[in-house]
Image (tube, rainbow, N blue to C red; front, side, top):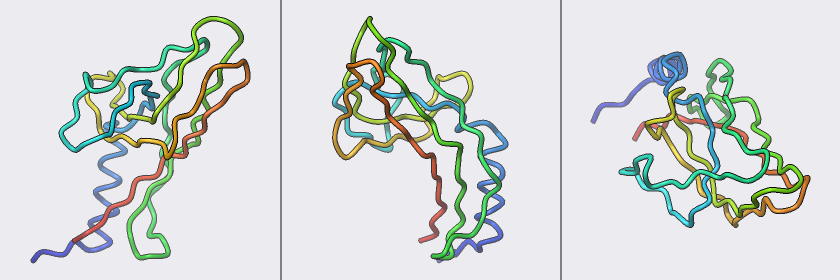
Length: 132
């Protein structure tokens, strides 16, 4: 069995964030459970009034309290504006800048309404390397 060191885990996170593979956060409105084989077509992007995908700025990676390499991104705050289309969103998916490849996805514990003006959803990006 090969075990990656914390040094290598940190360098992998450096490479992943520098390569811009995980730069855009999107909300999805279809009732989908993310899988490792997902492609962009598996997600129906939100389109409520005021919606737009948001950019992630990644901080430098670090070793967390459990000894795992981790990187944190800037919080992404999505806000519903008055009028127009409303949605219920089920989670987030993250793509590269061009938005054509899904890097990872997260389904919320429960769907979140983006119906009334002022409804908001906050996603705090976190990516952790785990050696097994």
